Image 1 (cartoon, rainbow, N blue to C red):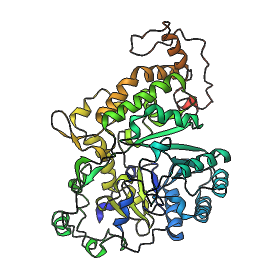
Image 2 (spheres, helix red, strand yellow):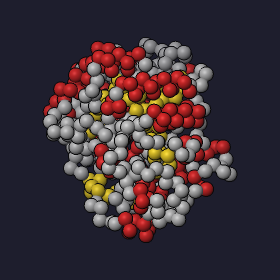
Image 3 (tube, rainbow, N blue to C red):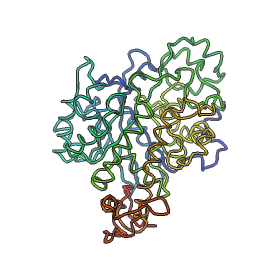
Image 4 (cartoon, rainbow, N blue to C red):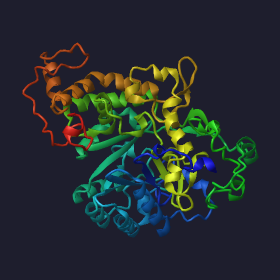
Length: 499
């Protein structure tokens, strides 16, 4: 138990800011998407669990979350499952609680990821009034979206999601599209991208569907207990988790200071085989490259694709804002409906259960030696193949959950999509390098479209640095020092790429 507390821990153990993915309805959802990795998390809890965040948990986690932040802006990320199943009254209470505990001068933001099925005019008026940023899950045009995104009866959902898209646009709600790339739609990059553009979408996230085949639960609880038994069960804070009697013995919980627990994944649960809907590495790389080639010539500054923004951040020397490509992680945690806190949204698993915020201070759990090491391991467990890779500064090995294949020389810990990431970052390097150079000169990155147009009619050439020379592309519009930085960071140009 002592390793979970801050006794003797230096103040630096607590990060100045961290992010919570809040699951107010747990894994409960009104759809049955084939590739959903979170739906089976219901099995972690006893049959009959409410899967509804109570007012007491809402208030407690809100207060603790705000108090723990040492930054001027705090974002609440609402996910699921499907968070809109909580109903509007819950979110009205959530906004009220945020205002109650907001520090003087602090800005509170809300982001909500939804399948859109329950959105209506009343929802959209609320979302607009309180400036929620909405992530709408949509996988492309009808035939591609409906391949895996179906309801509980196996019926297609495109029409309902398309209706939500138009509602959000009509009410002026800020939103982005979260498109899961799978074995089907990844073969149609321009069809997907052009569909979103034709529907007036400006902000797009492409997320790869990667899931290993889970073994049958062949390993009994007794086997798990024999390997991972811990004498002290005091950190098991809720009897709602499945097998509470067994968990009271901490049978599936490794010692809190055990390095064994820091494997890149719960390897005893999964094989290295992937599901039939998992995107292939070569598909992922080709998709990103194909979309980028169109975007960089036509849409820079008009359409914002998260993967491209993150690449630009890397080339201008910024820490990637997306945790997948950050050097370390551990500062983006998941909190379940009952206050259970886990290391990460992708690690909602008994092995990465930190404690319950109703029984232990959130700050102690976030700053625990286990969680801090969990974050550092993203960097420290990289195989040599990654450490020597020329695009490591942009990729940083990808998400640890998907590091389950071996390197060419047989070392474990390589990301399943490595070949795709390497192809993408290598392909975009000369273009992104030029965009970074434009930013440093005070020009918007969109100026690259003019450079490419001139180059492609014979007026441009490759510079000695390997980028596309912008020297003869004048006149180019300059960026005011107090204007928003064109890289998309949200900061002023003088405080970001203009430094």
